Length: 497
Image (cartoon, rainbow, N blue to C red; front, side):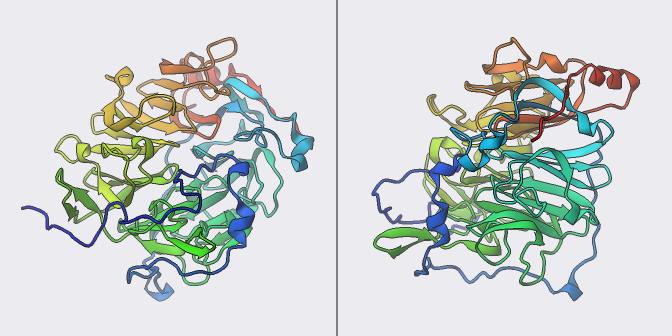
């Protein structure tokens, strides 16, 4: 039965207002020098863009369902490789106020064990393509954090950087089942479905109903009303966050600049003197519609979308639903949306390739300017670009170097990729790299084609995760042979001041 045509939803958000400069360019949040936080914090009220009648969703405490979410069943030892000078990652130089830490940290060109974690069983590790901080969850459900902390994104009540993983005491009484890293903010989910957020909040990405410089300790999302109900998973990437409830409804909050919140608007308004600002979503708002476009441009709604996974990249978002379909929206530059064109999409749009029987997706992953999906058969598909000097891939294409491999876990950093497939770990990425590929000392530092990480031969990797310039893996240690293999890896003990 054909889907009904929709005429009141614009996939690219309709007519765009011009910027004051007259030139439209994608925002890049990779460097502190590239975004004027002071101006954003001091913006004056203007006339916001028109919104639909949808209101932020909350549920009274007395009607909330009682749930208990489960932690990951994985357990193993954490390994790290790549850059560990957290103040320098993503920057040209260490800020003057952090000058004392300029010589701390080093590039680890091969896998290392964290000395302080030898007796800690890790169930999940979390980073982000633009994040210089990382998280881990233990098998007991405790959340640890370390890395850069300029905006309190580590959740320890201060802005002191941490060289080694440290448990977040403010969440010690909770069992944490999921977490997510943005560039300068963090979200954590408890087993009862309550989401906590901390870190930078200039654009409302913490979902606490306000815009502030920073929140240094964990506070409930939508703290001024009732917390979200049945939150089951979420990811976040500056300057937005996404949450999903157990019924498969998707909610978003933060900055809507390229329509990446999925509300059919980029939130732009002219505040004063032709200065364009953005009407940020300060509390979670449900994404109301999912669409598909025909070749002749007709827009049709896609019914029965139950969200199972969501991944956010640089100004774009991917969703995987219960029918193994993939949707994408936000900034369309470099083909990262996979729709064969570079137009922005203001609402989730179906990626056609995965909407056929037997060709659905089982996993999704967003990089900085690219997207990935793993097919039902374990094959890896890629679209977008990892190196802007090369031609963009405008629609999903199979990664030929991995044909025949069954991908179990994958992650993408700023421009590098790491994959756990079958019994091996594989990585690749263009220069410059800082050790996040894990090839080892006196080995090639970068690779434009997929290469096995020989330094992890004999190590079964349960999960891979890549941050801005560093990689984290959870290595299985169930047998004596696996434990002995891990003991042969060098140990990393960070220097401190």
